[in-house]
Image 1 (cartoon, rainbow, N blue to C red):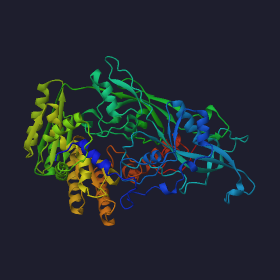
Image 2: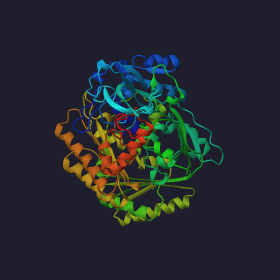
Image 3: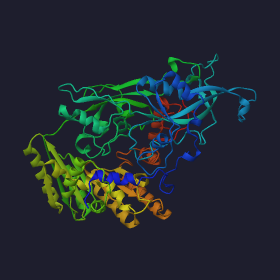
Image 4: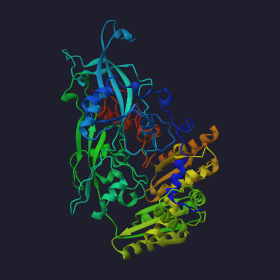
Length: 616
């Protein structure tokens, strides 16, 4: 029977398992630390939590197993690698003290260290570094939340030459530019930003709002509804604003309103300390910086674009606490449309022509045959949930009654929005004419909300519908988000038709299951490839190959390995291919300048050890 997207979500939540999904054959290098190797907060410095509690008695700190596990992964196939503690700060001062305690120096006895370059009897400074990852809603897809370097890897007890300028008390002999230091990883903490819930007032005539990093996209738009304004970046999931900035998110509306990079005017962040001190030393020199980047103005040419520096930084440079967002008026007239095509290439070419002709679409989504097949399959899944509220169930049933199986053909979904019905209908007619030129058929459109939702149902339900393609009966339940590879890439529009068609053909030829679809209006496309725990090694290798081919094709035509999901550790091996050694060196220099001790989300975007050989 027909069900709605909420039912599909509940269906998959019911089948979620807490055990880790084995993905060694499809992921990049898996985390070096696993749940079985951990003893909760035992790896942290012995006085870390007690010192923090003494400084801030009301600070919420959790070492509960469920909290640790849920903060060690996103919604992806990457293995879970939990933190040693989850901390819930309520203000920037608490974050400042947390970060200060995450990088401290202690004096160690040289006799406990074997190093031929150090004479017996001399002392050596040990710097204990606690890894830090900011946490929003946990919806990331490339292993961003996995603690890769928290104390079980090869980077502990590493003796390096460190510039003395990075110590609070370098000693009397300032002529010594470097000193021997042992950098030791001491666990990791997750900084949950859920208490940062402020939403500022929108002044009459202004097109911006200040919000806390923990505010979610849906709750922000609900709070803004009375103003007639809306935040238009829509990645699908109900992400936090801080997380969307950190991952450089975008989504279905980016073709008209842009990505997070175009919608962030300013932000506040806490940058980790660069200078370390001992346990008892407290100095302004080793205090983390609270910085304000950007202004409330809609444009600026003053200095470096610092908000853009943290947008897409994935928590590797600092912790975002507040964001000033660009707002847009809620359109008075909205029309949704759909059109079927005989082949995927023709549909993609129609999209390119719509864009080249300057037809102002608000959303432009392309689904391949497998996507439509997944939607049709989802209409017959039973949700088995008899406890829904009557009102919600009635509304969902009404929507389900409007849904019918679709012809299994590539589909183009369009949305047009504007200030007048006339202008919107003119745009619709122009797009329809172009679709017909590329042999489109069954062009349908609607302006009332319920019919629009029904018309776009195949796109709105695609994520869970795709995972349900690998559903199974019994206790195992089948695929879940934790066993599904969701990948993306972005290419120039002139290459979109060829690349997306080749990717869909790969899926068929390799014999794997999953749809290929995309935000066609800006050249961004995705594959959702669900897997089962008992899938063969050969099948998982085929899934990995589809992903690799997709990314390599995108880069070969001047595209990017990710349009909106981010790099994490899942795609960092592709960055050098995209930017060359010079580009990687510049990014490494920025990372070392702002986070020289590699405290913030180590192992993501770039592979950097602590500050050895730092050219200062």
